[in-house]
Image 1 (cartoon, one colour):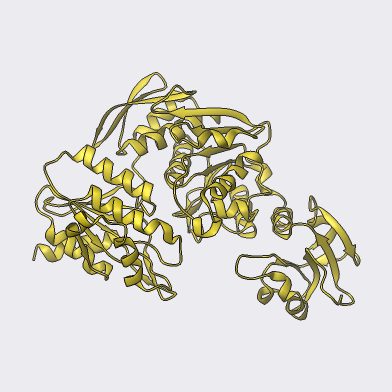
Image 2: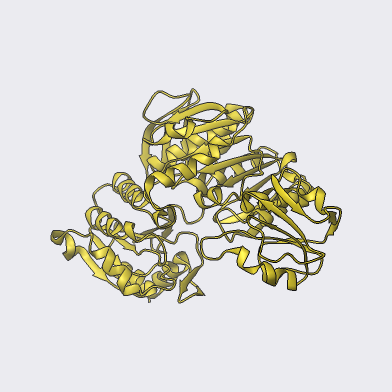
Length: 488
């Protein structure tokens, strides 16, 4: 238990009604979770306003309430604190309640539309390989040293996040590499984190259902850089046309990387194949096991961030050259007789899908067909669906439109919105198979020797969400099962 006056450190309080010298057992933003002797923070969410549940929280035992507007009637024996921003207050309270563990870690945040998971995960692997005990917070997994935990969000809620940091510190971690989503930045989940560095990979069409416009999406990403202290570094990928916007107001040391332009960290692709890529950087030519120009950018950013964190450049390149890719990111799954090569990739945005299709074309040659299985998630940005259909049809020999995670939408309607973007002249390339398992099987049956099957959209995910229910589904496992049936 902590005193209320201790856990509101750094919280800008506008007004207090009651005695701050009370002990608080726990803190919650969901009134249903409140227990006796706890603090309730009323946060205005996109779907629910926590201020509507202050009375419920008090009925469940809350002794203190933080809110942006006082309720009409103030209960006796309850402390009320008025703040301008409850979400920001929540972030500071979470840090205080866990004794500010982030102060004992060197935390590097990675933001951007594509590449976040690969960059953060490779940094985590690199630092562990170099003898540092590190933490990871990513879309794929949360890691505390070598211990892995399942991930629920790209960037968890502030309370959960601070709990992870506390465990990292307790278990001897010195560094943490984390993905920072645009949602998390707008919702102040990372507001209390003293980042030592921030990385920007790229920004393309995504999450417009939440942000409303591309300009607002850019502003959301920029928050990470605007909040950096002078002692931090801000590293951007100059190959993205919006990258320099991130640096406009930052106090941090500004650094750049590029595979195409003069930059602080320059990479030159010499060879690019299905086996990997040869790149010149840091004064050396290095062979990497990852494939594609987009991975060249990812590797260059990892190398640059490592050097900015004090790692010897030669040591960083040596370890990176030994590393495999990240699960569900351009992950190859071959048939036992090697007659068919399938690639599973998380590409769920137009730009990511285009990158992976262009990469396959470049590194595989023109000997075989490219068959793409792709869908779009339900209850997410609808404006990208026609573009996804168009890109798939233009850059593939055959396209099978199917379900992704339809969630609470009709899968058929999602597919129809994708087809709307396919030029009439290319619709002969498109087949509709709504069931994703059957779609993968059809793609494999259509594939001949030297053909490549791309299964896009879900990547590392091991579930499919239909009508609010998550069912076990792993594209990689489905491919292996399908290959077995083709050989019987």
